[in-house]
Image (spheres, helix red, strand yellow):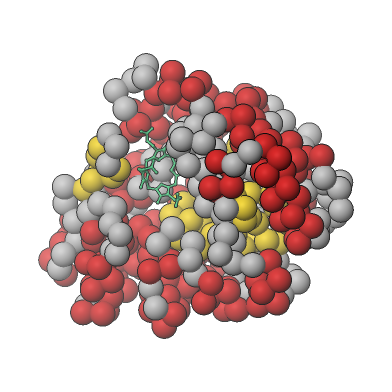
Length: 342
Ligand code: CP3
């Protein structure tokens, strides 16, 4: 299937594009009333993610309603711990919760390397349906959590401001930590390869909790495993988004990936200097800008576009869109990017 709009793929590969492509992290779900309608027809987030026809429907909604240049498959990074043997619940207004966590070496017996064809077949089905229904309109983004971020949920058992249990394990039990990170890495490689086989045109690795590690911890326990994943995925372009890892930008330039995601604290100029010219940069408007007036959103979006210069840039927010942002505000951002020319 040839893509009618392949701007994101070409931008990732460093090819010239007629205009800067745009999509939003966490664009599926959260902000659209159309999403909530589908979500209310089932028992909750997990049932929705596990029902391929509905997952495909909410994946495509932002393409139809917001006009983004890519779809991202509706799922969650936490399907990997589940496929490895630690099921999760999504608690309304609180977030994910794991009944069982990894506390000691003995707990490693609870987990296995995921077999995505077996345990995550619903994602495979959702991708196939989505690709069929998109019919080449825009590329489909596959994704997974980075090993450190997945590890942090498997150890902590829920969200946390500091993830201090997970961090503690890195310091107190480095060997056990490496064993678990290795298992997550292998599971993730298999999972991303399955997504690509089913039709994902590009994949993104989310390291949402990168910013809580020290630079040396980040190298040893996070970047090393991201690097393994990047080396294993050669079929499609890879994007690495490590939230808060400003201190790792120079070393990220060595990753075998096409695109590095920037959060809103990472200035373009310093990032380009540290990362070099051989990678595409994705980002990085502060998500909170979307609370301001249309005029201000336009002004800040244009300022961002001018800084990035219109080449090797995929426009996005610096993190996921917040749930209470109005879809009209998101549209102002998207339309501003689409109208702008370098
Ligand atoms: O980008 C997309 O819209 C595609 C789907 C997607 C979801 N989660 C659906 C979801 C993606 C790419 C994710 C990634 C994800 N999940 C991350 C990394 C990105 C980031 O934001 O840093 C993380 C850390 C998670 C874990 C997670 N999932 C949390 C902490 C929560 C609860 C709070 C929240 O963010 O909404 C979720 C739930 C979740 N994942 C929802 C959706 C649409 C909300 C569930 C609902 O509908 O009630």
